[in-house]
Image (cartoon, rainbow, N blue to C red; front, side, top):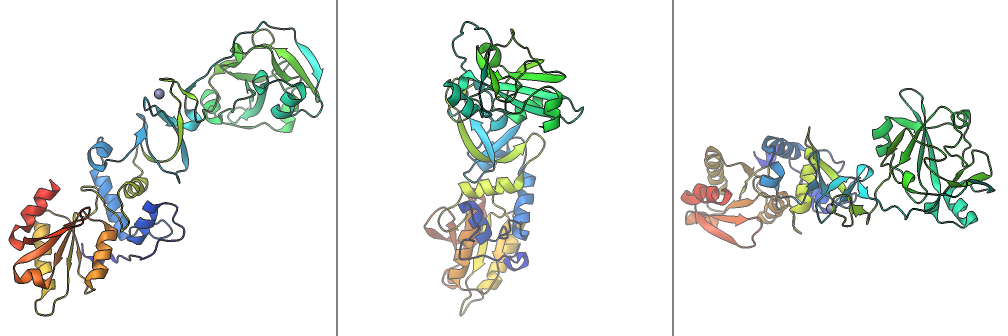
Length: 398
Ligand SMILES: [Zn+2]
């Protein structure tokens, strides 16, 4: 492809909406607009990644620091919108909302008799624990939903110190929405003071720690009152007992017991499809320096950036055109910068766009039958004889 045909617009400055260096360089090098829309160069690159993609895509071509499991592949990045739980020790990886972790129950206690207590203005776990002077883990947190498919009331119980995961709940019961005030009253519960005890027509779902926790404080289903010493099995039971808790950083890995990390990430692939725009971003985050992109072969859209420096005596451009055809015939993908710009401008753009190899046809070298070859990741350049250039490039790319 020719630079002019691609209508590449490079920029000297980072866009002010750049959240990451990779995005900044993608815009500056003319792969993306500031609005994150692929340009023609960007589309070529995405199509090329599509063409490359196969089962061992990430491992064999892209050498990206990825995490994942058999269904999903992620790239950790501070600006990422997906929170992923990851175990650095055994590599267990799962979306945080669905991640498993090892729970530690408290020691078993003897079950005490249930006791109704006055708890005014205690409609949160926080205020309740403070008022009764008990730790939050000694309370039962109630969450109330209505199932979308059949309107069934879903009453969820987790330990008061833990955060429920709606995603895990949905895996158990299907899609839900928050229950309305009328629905809560209709099953015999009281918002802020709700428990499973004495409910009618509710599907009760409890976290798997609840049957192992004794003497929890729960609502009395009467405003201003709670019950002390409620016990699963004795006072109520559930239709479903399952893991309903959202993991957090530092929780023990369910596989190996080491602490889990939580990493903001972007999704690169599922079993069904690749997210090529995210893959391009991950590539540029991983492969850049302070001058621009340093895309590896074969992930780069073009292997060679070919340019000429306009001469005073010799026609460098025609020679570069010849070389362009020759390289293309040899199956090498070339971006030919055919503009009559100053050398400095073209060098800057070549660095920004980041093809692995740069070939420069200049007057001085041409007089001796030589062109300049520079690898993007190496500082020095070298002069090579024009007749050898195809073979040399082929050997670099292999
Ligand atoms: Zn682990």
